[in-house]
Image (cartoon, rainbow, N blue to C red; front, top):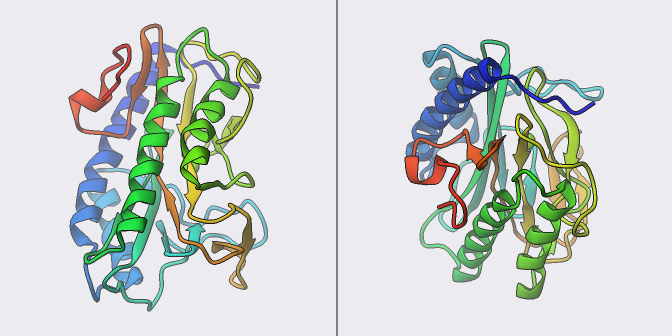
Length: 265
Ligand code: MG
């Protein structure tokens, strides 16, 4: 069942998204050479609590092992679900940060990738293409379109540029739970999948690699890395569908947020 949210629910989700966007600013400022990923986690958790919300990822348990932290930090060839620990951020690292919160019973989820200077220009190009692919996908998230149109657009942007789409991980509906229906793949065919209607809220999150896009799970049971060790980037926004088009909930920038017809940035 795909939930269609009522107006008051969307208002709560706007608050959740805004709070998460505030936390994003704190996290972005913290990422620097020599900080440990554990320190970034502690700072993220404190920032989430400070806005009156709770971390969505800590204790999240879809399988056997609950996620032990408030943020996933995935470095270089790691794609998603990296577990914070003693590792220190180094010059040239490609750092993907993925985290969420729950406020008033409603979840928000976001991710972004940073390149620590001096970065490889090829990593910067991957980062830029992944972010652009996310916005191109978001632009498809409007009434009259279908979920397959989002993945078709994402794939159609990154594949000709020589990048690999991670197909084993997908975006998702979000609301009363962190992961709800529908699945939102980053590949697909035009005019397929569930209809996109006002009141739907989805997390659109391309995971793109400089290699083939095949993944493996590491021994900690969580960290997902590319099979070919190619570097990977990840961007994600929580997006509400309004009659006028997509409204990005997880940003503080009114120019990015507003549901205007393309371009949406
Ligand atoms: Mg997500």
